[in-house]
Image (cartoon, rainbow, N blue to C red; front, top):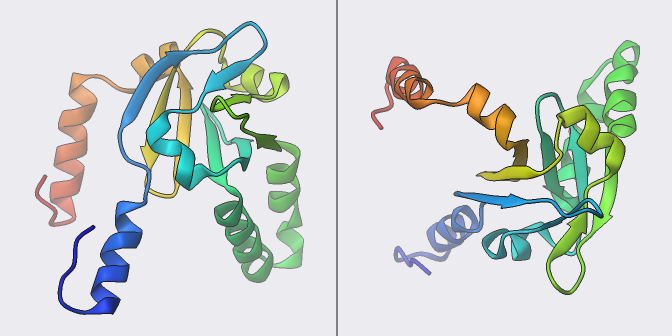
Length: 158
């Protein structure tokens, strides 16, 4: 816990520290279960959402998912309701067991190409789960150079 002299600042720092950071390389068993990395379990909670959003699955703590859906509902015009429908169709609530395992729905795993080896990556308020193949295809030593360069374009030195 970091304390900066006032409660508001402490709360802000404490909240940021509870975000998802880092990665974990692991596998998926024959039943479609993954072991949620220990460092992600508390913030993720026992009940969360798994969503397919393209080349990976995204795990959302239930409160983050509900906030996202409320923002969409409040900000999208009625003509764009298919966005919420698509998200709902491509997401499922999931429970974590006492051993920290969760079943990833088979249809969502298939869409993301997840069969065996996976990489979980913390992204502040959510977790991305890639198949190892998709991760290797998307990320390389050159992609990290691009990341540093892109951040510099926005005045951020890494």
